[in-house]
Image (cartoon, rainbow, N blue to C red; front, top):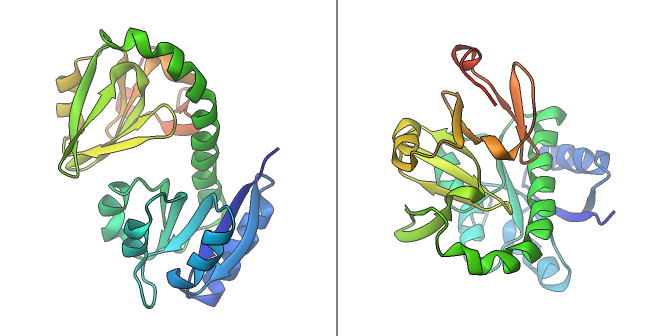
Length: 237
């Protein structure tokens, strides 16, 4: 098994130690180093492959999000912060997850599972995508506004859609995400795709991408999403 090489950029020593301990508990992750600020991490990143950054937002010298914007080809990033107000901005930068401090190992592991799903899907989907190119002409798709650009999303590549209040995060095969300004109900009506089913006030999922389900949750794209109580009697897969 190829391990994902991880670094931690965190200026609080106790938080950094906790993250290092969590990373060492996960067999698929390889801990490389901890840095107290983003600029210190650049030297290692320029010399060695870095697959994952656990990145604090409030850092000395250069803030975490500004550092992330400066990277031309950033690795996968999981943000760790005590401040919830940067969540929307961070998803627009395609972060894998947003961990609010303090968090325990189960929440950390949930973020890592997203990471693993992104990593596996990107490898699995790469070759078949080449073979599918000739058939993309008539595939249903929509363009969504993200960061002042129009991004094409094919309906049949959507795994699930998560509500972010005034925005939605569209999670796509291969680990890509698109964050665009829609309420979830409006998005559902806009696509009008019978393959998308509402399972929760915060989630739409693609029926044909569901890997497993119970009365309380759905497994899709390596994630477990809850089925809302008012939807439990309505959801049919």
